[in-house]
Image (cartoon, rainbow, N blue to C red; front, side, top):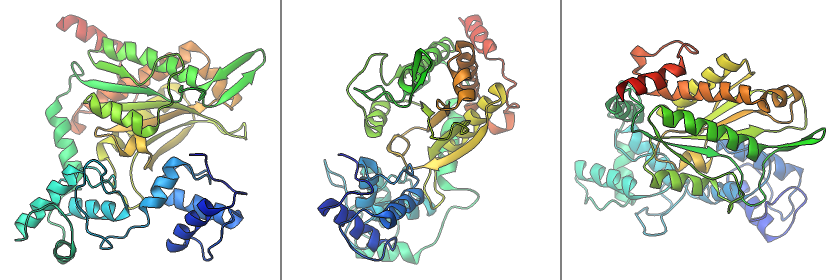
Length: 382
């Protein structure tokens, strides 16, 4: 859909505004997208971990549509092929996770895993285990408290899965997602004298370099696109591809842009909600990638952040998005267009991926891994 923005008017604006009124972000209904509504949309995006731009595109509209629902307003059940989606589902998933039931990621989708968790809860409290969440199930959920202590339940599960995976990179599957590149989507584009640098081209070069280094370390590597323009892919499309490949990790590569040339630095994003629930292994991967890049390149540290972007929310494996600098910053751009600097970034990400599989107690200082040793060790095993 075309993004709806400040200055627009009509029925679509009126519907969006009515949702914002229901969320107490606006006070008056209208069909005008004015400055007050722009601020309300930005506040909603910030609170939901979306990109904050004031535009209502597909992802923001999906989040607004889901936000209509509050837990208890409808009976929830597993529907195929069109699953129920809403804020009520996310609240239920969070509650189940707090109680120790494996509802999967808090993705707001009432899928098979959520239904199984509800059925398990129902069985344990003496209700019919049909996997649907109606008034009786809600009453039982509200009556009971947490039953897992000593850590966040999803952290315990994810950490155990990684412990069992072992420290070896050989045989593990990773998806590298060079952002943009679909159709006419080139991302940030900056003219530089006689040259023209585009985000899509630079991140594909980084992805191709990273593919070679990870493959040399023994991993199975898949890219979400090639160097030539393809059909546009949404975040959901890229997540579905990674899920279909059974990937162990996903790393999405992007560059940033800003009207102010002084904006520079690297930032990394993982899945997380405003209520504090997150993919905790994804959060660890984001921390490792961010720290390795900052230490090895000297780029400004813009830290890690939790977001609910579809690419991060819908993947079934730990996933991060890395914004590797501002193409609009002369300082960042001068480094990013240098192939040797891009090799430094690749080495940083490779080191972070290896550290992901080290047990926490055996982790090493940031910047200390010699990634050349990974290839040598692989060659010696062969």
